[in-house]
Length: 399
Ligand SMILES: *Cc1c(COP(=O)(O)O)cnc(C)c1O
Image 1 (cartoon, rainbow, N blue to C red):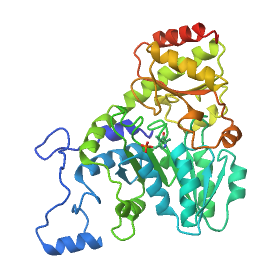
Image 2: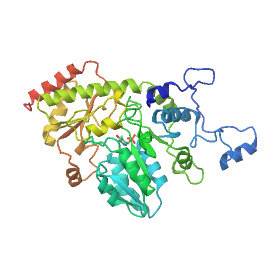
Image 3: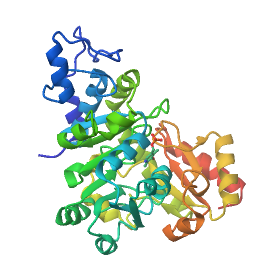
Image 4: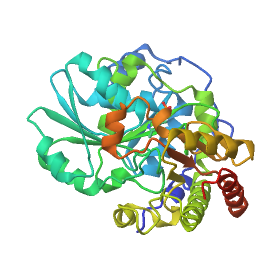
């Protein structure tokens, strides 16, 4: 049977306290126990099913986590106050002092900064390489390697990781494979393809409203339980839990994610075709000449399309800046970082979301300084949007 993330969410029956169609919001930090013994047993982990304290579990967060687990086909999930909280907690849970991590060279800027500047404080080594080069990955494995970290679709080059092949390498060497699936929820289900841990910034497509930051970790029961272990769990101890008021809002938005992903993908594919037809250098994984088009097709749930992200190359920072300013003025969307919003957002990656990555590394990654990343919105008439962008390009004499 086809894996259908949207139906998996739809099939969940999550009622509120009074039969409410939306689960009740639990607005409490702590919970009473009828018997003192039950409290002790909950602390030691001997008793399950009781709520103890909201840094550990909150019923509203549990409803959202269960829906995310259903979407990704994982046995369990946990929700965090930001995507970075999900990434940092999940990584720290996998490694100890003296261990080694292999990471994609092209990750989200915050992730890169964490792995480059932060984890070395704990005597953890990180090798950055092109994780789409499987031979390079295999060569980099050491006796103390514990984790391979990558993104399904990387930012901002939109290259695709071969998750099934990376999973094979990990299985063979007893490593964990962690995948950031922020750009491609529903489109790709990394756990079903062999990843051990899937992390999300829910700030982006999953919530889709740009009204909060939030994150999630989807994995096995064992991994999620280890994260929230009272004595040793990174998430429990560092404490970046999501607020239940927010999680109840995100859960409602999750129920429209499948429709939004289809529209984001449709609009992005349309713009990519049009951009190419007027001679722009445009990068979109849905285009047949994209380096990883065939690989992506093998991994994706086709009905959700190739995603809402496009990159175009304007060659210089100056040309990119002029175009972005004019597009904002003409109402194409906003000159802003972030993605997965109902309006189109655009930014120059090298000077914003990837600015943590040194310029020489950006060059090595193949990132042009004039690269504009678009997160294409839910525009009802995408041709009208294209005409606006075309006007801007003509006005600047770029086409
Ligand atoms: C935004 C983003 C993050 C970080 O998430 P926050 O919610 O901002 O903490 C991590 N990975 C990717 C791919 C992102 O786009």
